[in-house]
Every structure is written in structure tokens, then in C-alpha cells.
Length: 111
Image (cartoon, helix red, strand yellow):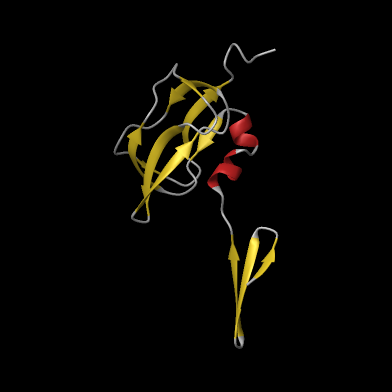
């Protein structure tokens, strides 16, 4: 196995397999999360919404659980803040990139 940044190349006799690492927590720290948008990393079904609008959240807190590819994926808060709105109910089907909820900076954390 050869490590190349976020890629791994698995070498076997006469073959090479490239694998890209996907870290949902790191992806959530991108521009959308900073702007308060938290999106689905893949298509799936919402099996649990663990927060309500107005609820304060800490970085890393579980917010939504999605079922995709026969597995449950916990979507966590990328930063401290407050839930501004929740866009899907339990049982809803979501597409890749669908905005699950909106976060706003906590009033105490604002300059």
C-alpha cells in the first residue's frame, strides 16, 4: 500500500487499485458548513433527527442519522452554534448534497 495524500494505492502482482479516502467530518468543514449549510454526503433516508430548531450544538455533536448503502451514517456538527432550521423529517429521502439543516453562529460566540 502506497500513501499519496488522501489516496491509497494498493499494489498487487500486475495490478494497482487506487482508493480515495472520504472523511465526512473533514468535508463538512468546507465552505458550505462555514456558511451554515449542512448537506447530505450521499443519497439516503433520514432515520433520525436529533435536534430541533433553536437548539444549541457543540462541534462534533450528532445532528442527523442517514441510512445509505445499508449503513447508518451520523452527520455531526462541524462547529459550535445553534440550529436555525431543519429541512427534512424522519423517513424523508434525500439526494446527495441536499441541505439537511442550517446552523447559525451562537449569539455568545459572535464578535
